[in-house]
Length: 216
Image 1 (cartoon, rainbow, N blue to C red):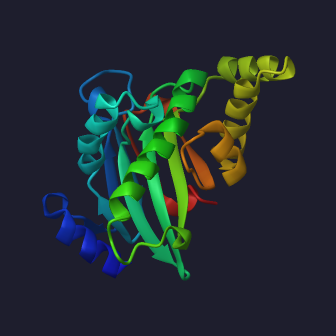
Image 2: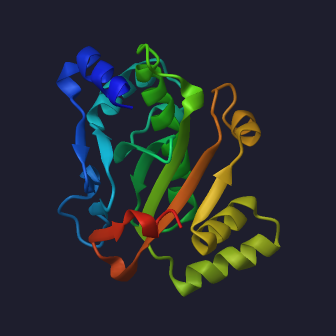
Image 3: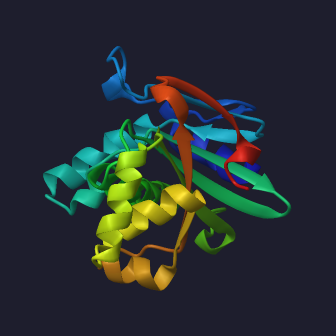
């Protein structure tokens, strides 16, 4: 991973990555607003933090091209880790309320951010996509009991999105198989992505969590 980051910093010197043991992320649109999730800190990791603004800056290309909305949204954070001989790309997205529209949007933002990062990395000699496992972390205020009950009710009527939202908050994990990703996001070339859910209690605008409590 070090070689990749060295190459990244050489090709994109204005967006220098940094090694961190705590990752802090901001939801820029929510800063200073009440009843919103504004900050998320993930402790207990040895990671390389990729500046999210490099993704934001290339998003204009896809906006000008009128590309699919998946490519016109930005993430709240990106970090890379390597452990046990495996390499991981993590995309972080924060939402205040746990609603169907917010969670589906967050899922698409994770996909779009990965694809844009992949396009940047593809210029680098030491980047080999097959070596990297892609994961997303979606954080939001914990859904209310009423909201969960609504997901259950709609799930029983065959509402696929409600079923996904219910299972995701229950299991705190959801695997999007590569085959399904390629069908759903066609013609985008999307690999398998595993999503993790962080439920923020008490509508706290600032939340800290240990990394190992996310990926259990």
